[in-house]
Length: 272
View 1: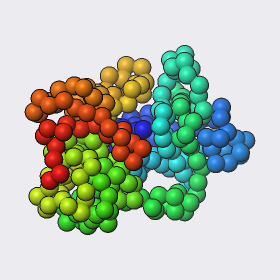
View 2 (view 1 turned 90 degrees about the horizontal axis):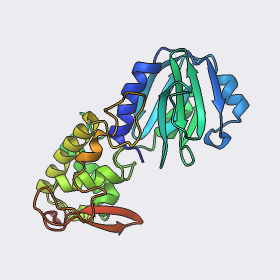
View 3 (view 1 turned 45 degrees about the vertical axis):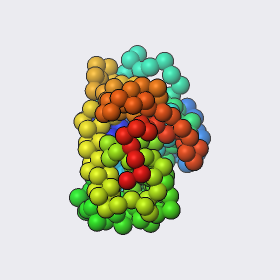
């Protein structure tokens, strides 16, 4: 599932392609990906101009010129491609937005969605999210306060809770825990202040590096895109079971925690 780095990478690329552009036509291949009937969605979106794209947590908001929003959550398996009909991958498209300079294809929206909302409805939908992980207002002190609302939880469970901090999911929770030398099942309430400080720094370092590397998305955003997915080869533990830890040489293991896969090095990651 795309997380903060992937969605912010998408935001940047989309801004260069569709911000300020008029939506010439709309095609809906799967009505269940929407929150309104397909014909209503087409009627209200077609002809509108995308003013700008905003990210909030794992969501993208397309701000339209009539004040409405398109709220996107890719969920598991969702991705986007921008280009021509001839260039697009041979995959089923759930929604297509056509612009003068190309088309934006929403692919894999089986669990994900593209909802048409008013500004108030969008604000209400996103109000439950916690602060952004790299927001300057999320100081170390505030970060500690947010974590301690889940003091009985395991570290990974707290990190992926979108009401605690928005934008971190399975991949980066594991990567952040590794960077901080903490086990994913370490209890929040037992962490020392020094451990929380390491975790805070690790969160910044991992997310900034992943964003700069294009995240871990598998598919390119457009023809000639060599940036998207660049972080795939940089992951230290995520999806690396059986490989040697790059820090200590121990063997990375995969376990299950709260029905989620979790990857870590049992040799150099500790409870504190």
